[in-house]
Amino acid sequence: MSSAAAGTPLAHPVELLVVNAGRLVTARTAPGGARGHALDDLETIPGGAVAVADGRVADVGPTETLRPRYREAAIVDAEGRLVTPGFVDSHVHLAHGGSRHEEYDRRIRGVPPPEGAATGIPATIAHTAATPDEELRQRALADLDVMLAHGTTTSEAKTGYGGDADGELRLLRLSAGLTHPITLVPTFLGAHALPPERADDRDAFVDAVIGAFPAAREHARFFDVFIDPLGFTREESHRLLTAAVAAGFDLKVHADQTADVGGTALAVEHGATSVDHLDHADADAIAALVAADTVGVLLPGVAHHLGELTPDPTGHVTKPHLPEQVRRLVTAGARLALSTDYNPGTSPTRSMQTVLELAVRLFRLSAAAAWHMATINGAHALGVADERGSLEPGKAADLVVWDAEHPAAVTNRFGTNLVAEVLKDGRRVVTGGRVMR
Image (tube, one colour):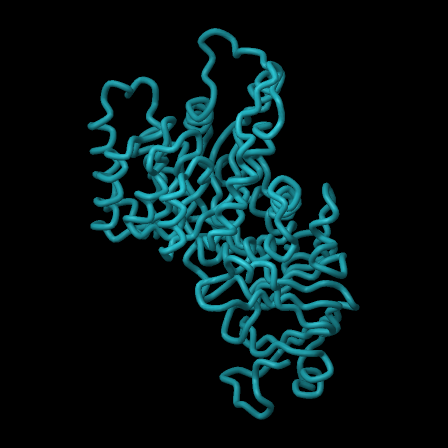
């Protein structure tokens, strides 16, 4: 198998050849990504190789075919190890301040917070407001380094902890100004949660978010809203999404995390690129999702961190239905991605490896399905599938060499970073599990 015919002229000469992959995962799929039974059919090339020209994939195929074809290229020898596309993490709350570890320790033990203490999103909003810009910037860069070292090469950079329109614009400008090897896609999450002090001023809050759209559009491709009892109503969200489309945004939506309020169906109705969480989406919403181009994004880190599949101290299980919900989505044929939902309160992990490890255990996904969801389907969820998410000619040469020999060997292990090397746009940026400077 080879993707470029011998003798085909290239716009740029091949300068790098990754050879001797024990298995090369291309993650190539039918247009639109993998869904249904195709999720379990992951394209791999035994003894594979990747040719790189000007930071892009020029060719993929067996080493025995590509090596004589590109004799002048520098060699990266995978020495029998697994080679895959870099992860695409499509749901990431990058810029924020503080930690909620004390709150988490109390919550997991069933201990109520101290009287008057801020918890949840309002607590992080307060921490973020009190953190200087440069400290937020350095923290975000450090988080990105951890993500890169664990195999993520493309990531969303979502706001959400600004507290009001001005605070969200502050975080958006900060995120959009970051320089890092990871490709960042900024999202203006101007409607994450209504601050308690604005509970009687909901319409004015929504108006202020809409009023910030022209400034936000200068930096963000996407607008996001949390449609949930903990966030915004269906009617408020309809206003926001309609205005966002008119302002030129593409859409990403949090929906139906704690209850079914019609958020998934509304996201599909508005043509959202992705709708995330889906924990309580009903059968009609799932059918609408299957029929649409919208990608559903699963966030197993949240279920794991909040202990939603295990009894709390009172014996109550919050979401015993969640594995079956994922099975319904897969069986119905929805396009699905996996993401960290990195944030300080409900999923404080920066590792897509951890997400894959959790997905196969909590949701009983196959390793092949998890890899599809974390690469090419994640790229569709972030609107970058034309450029990233799979190893095929013309796309960016974002790839990972693993200290493992098989895709299922990565999901089988847990708690250890198995990344050996990362190449970003054809340039080595991680070696020996460490980010290069």
